[in-house]
Amino acid sequence: MALLDLSKYEEALGSIDPVRVNGKVTQVIGLTVESEGPDVAIGEVCSIHPIKGGSPILAEVVGFRNNRVLLMPLGELMSIGPGCDVVATGRPLTVQVGSELLGKVLDGLGRPLDGSRLPIRMPHASTHTAPSNPLTRPRVVEPLGTGVRAIDGLLTVGQGQRVGIFAGSGVGKSTLLGMVARNTSADVNVIALIGERGREVLEFIEKDLGPKDWPARSSSLRRPTSRRSSGSRVRSSLLRSRNIFATGA
Image 1 (cartoon, one colour):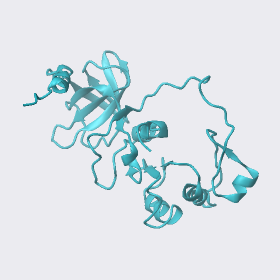
Image 2 (spheres, rainbow, N blue to C red; image 1 turned 180 degrees about the vertical axis):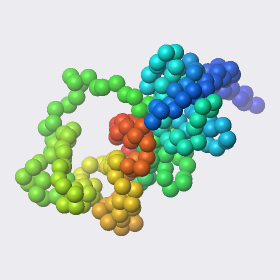
Image 3 (spheres, rainbow, N blue to C red; image 1 turned 90 degrees about the horizontal axis):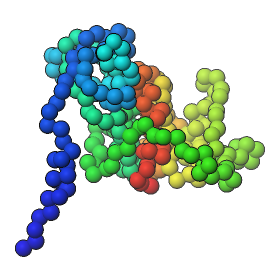
Image 4 (cartoon, rainbow, N blue to C red; image 1 turned 90 degrees about the vertical axis):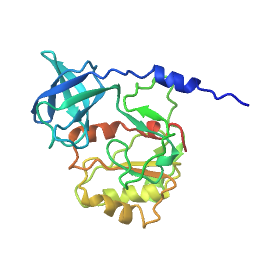
């Protein structure tokens, strides 16, 4: 009879802190939440629990003032007030990564917007990543096909290059982005609609990216629109493609 290996469970139990120390919200000014405790560090994520019940919201520790903790909310503050419990998670904001995100539309915190659940087995990666060593970054020497002849013929884009598209409203920036996403030779597309109007998201997917069979095999769409909290939009900009697909595709 084979023995059951319990080593990984023992290791998991060893990393659990059975004592939870809570803080309390003391005041909320604009988009800043001030709390008394808990014992946290800059960049750590806390959950704020409404007094009247409901889902807790996440907030990131951004500073300290007069022995109080300053938090930047990553969600709506409508139900948050003085006396709400602030619980430290003991880690920075992390998102699930892997090829399972291909074809998903995500919010600013990396959660699917279609109501589906990502597999539990997917690993997590922190949104706070150290900048890469400039001496280890490869030079831009290989072209990247966009599938747009005007760009490939006259304004060739290189692999690893950063390119900006600047124009006024309604002149075709999203249309051009959709053309590149449909026809590029890149293996994976990560498209972030940060600050866009909410009504434009579905239009972009169905009109600019294509019909319902849009290139789900190679694309992932992040959608922290203008109605989301500023903290959520900031975090979304840090969800780089090297994090999201670090273990997949």
